[in-house]
Amino acid sequence: MTVATATQTLEERVEGWANDLCRALEENYKQETIRSHKRQRDEGDSWAQDYHQDRLDEIALGGGHLYKFAAYKGRKYIKIVMRQFDDMGPQRTNTYKDSSVHAFIDKKTGQVYMPAGYNKPTLTGKYPVRWDLRIIKDREYILNPHNCGWAGGYLYDRSTLPNKYY
Image 1 (cartoon, rainbow, N blue to C red):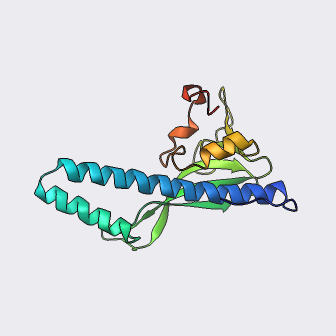
Image 2: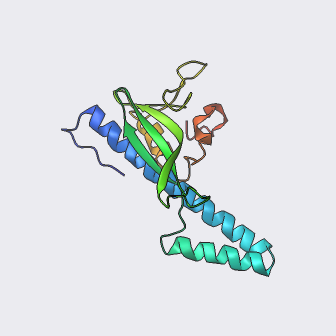
């Protein structure tokens, strides 16, 4: 987790928190993938057991081409983008490519928004701001890999969260 210093501006802190969110999302995806392969290995036939154990071994060695997340700075927002490894089909490049926008973070305020599309956040609706990184409780919650979800579920309605979180 990025440690903020007294001399950093809010914008610099928000950028650090955005990078922390990317790392938390990557760890969340890794743990979900491991959990899924273990479940499939334990419930499958011998071929499936071998396949899933091989995938678990790859992940343990730092491979497996798991999803990655990147933070791109724009004029007003930091865009959090999911990146997938391109190793399929005749046009494969065997590199990571941007695939979808996960969230937007306002550079000046640290407020987290759901994406409305690839280039802009959702600014309308009952609760357009999903989280505020300036609020310690919000920041600690979403930067924890057990709470943020690589698929973005934590960006939806917070009324379903236990009271101890919000």
